Length: 99
Image 1 (cartoon, helix red, strand yellow):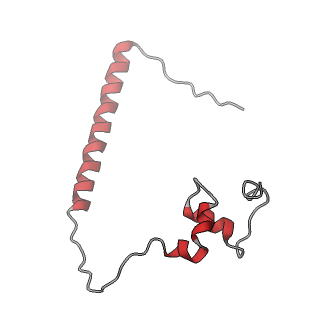
Image 2: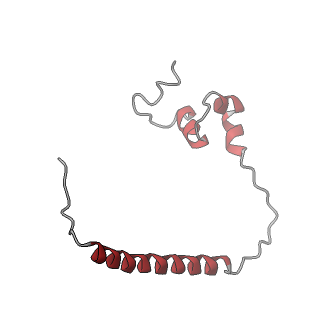
Image 3: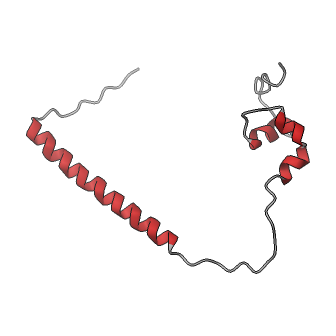
């Protein structure tokens, strides 16, 4: 079923006036978003007093490099879902891996 919205039809001058009012609101929103972004960037930082490193590949090592290489173009989370036997997988999700 297709729902059609009945739009108000107006003259060109009325349309231009309505468009300018709407454009003013869009510009106001843009300025508010810019101000909010600027305020976020100016927030103070927290001092980190612990030594630690990031190991983004740690989860990949747990599953083995080959597990990820078998699924080119897939995100790591998708590979984990496909290779983790403890997860329930819906029928058809592994069809590309069975080929």
